[in-house]
Length: 278
Image 1: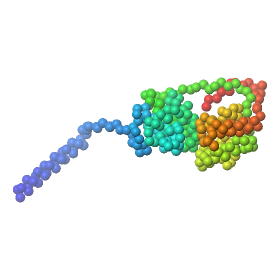
Image 2: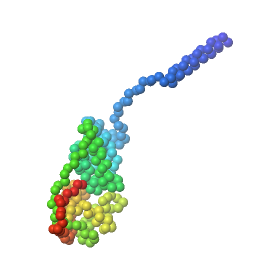
Image 3: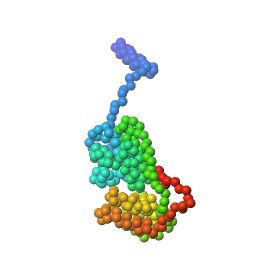
Image 4: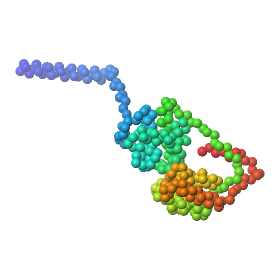
């Protein structure tokens, strides 16, 4: 009995000691804060080589991680088409490709931005929204790379003398017999409703006409976006010949332009320089 009493006393003493420790922990005394451990961001989509430099890492965090989940990855990844700026097996390869289509000094002028602004594979409701989004990605990259906030630089537009010009007609009769047949024949696999904007190859000629207007230069057909996409950017040329494809598109736009009369500037109108800031 005496032994049992001693054991009970010891147990009671141990419980009292534990209670004192617990009270001490909750008495408001400060505790040691463990320092945060720096880690590379975890990205389940990437398992390739580590970034070679800090700038490559900045590119990955600001641009690659965002674009690899967008429509860009459907074409511009490994095994796809150049430039492979979202290469999924080597971030350093992606970085090298991105530098050919990105302007860190003026992010909004990056080819990566202007292409999307022109209707190339936007994943949002409007092309401008996609362009603004990518611009912000590049600005973040530029800011991290420079170690400072990137400043916006405004550039004065080219000065143009007002004069004779051509205006798109309200009806699409001439468009439907010149440019439209090429668009429906060679662009309808992608640029139709339900697949991809702009709907320049829509079965509805009115829809196609409205989408194509801002991609056609009536004054200088060779400068039309529809021509440059083929001639300079080699985008889905037919018969594997971008030179002849671009020339065929330019000729069609020239034929369409020839049907439109030039509107002369009224001499009684006081005109200023025709400037625009896009």
